[in-house]
Length: 480
Image (cartoon, rainbow, N blue to C red; front, side, top):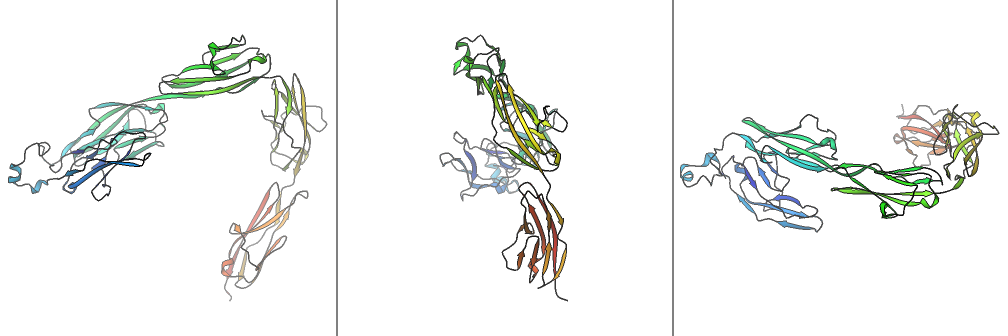
């Protein structure tokens, strides 16, 4: 090869699933270094934008490794000799043909041309959610640089990566918004060339609204919705207990309209498992929904009787329930006959009563009542609002001479109905086991102090509901 000319060393690795990992090595089993001038393409071939004398090598060997079978295929070695322009004398030149020179262009500067892809335009199709790889490899002298942009839009900065010395544009988690025209341009001081790649994004079906389990009481109405998107748009097939719905026994309370199954005044015999299958040429989604027609009086499912909370914190009183028709939930406090409404309370759909800022007067008995047309159930719980834990006398900063002693005090105030435990930490870690450390109820004493005892000491007061902490620094100095 004449110095400065382009070259492609073919690999053509065997196919496999998953595809093999392709790499090039020399006869010493060392991976060949790659750079902006020499790089491996997505197809496994080795591309030289321009060959140089240092590329001369007896063995260029392409390997294909199949990880699944733990096998490696080796291609036939390729030998390359690059003839430097300044070393070619008239005698050698006279014995070489134009073909030997891989063309008749001189090894001086030339404008870029694309080795991959060919032509001025190309198309590529990618599936939503997959990885998009676009490749542009150019030859030229000096070595061309590659730049990428998308016509009419910005590249997604959080999902785009430039690989293989900017020759590969990678976009992960592809979405429909990534469709469009991508322009790769190769340029050097002699000129430029570009290629337009039109990206078409297709999509296997994906859910917009999948069908949800449905519990109805006899005589109620309801709907199952099976809504999906895809490109091309998916078709929708309904099944009941594994049988196509148009072949299932007729049910006058059931009507199918595209992506929706509607129930009107259902009866108990309408209980069944419904399947929704959405499909196109790229895949399918299948979802099950259980339609249960039940007549059940309300049941409250929680057995917890006492809730404790620190004053000024939120309290959550649970009332999980079941029933068909769906029960209506009401809360009462103590012996009050009136139902609790807004006024400092939040009512959750799952039956929980939230007291956003519990105060002492929030203490008391609360009753949750669940009702439907078949009956009533109720549950009574106690809410206890406790005083917060506080450190009323904090440890203070100390400066102590080496070999002296020091004490830190930590007086704690807490709700008398809660047990409090006081722990001491040094630099946010447990105290080391050392007889010089004496821990009393509200005091830490350190004797025969050494330099390693300096640091931050923290007392932590814990109850079952809250905690409080305070810290002080101990500085150790030498004797004066």
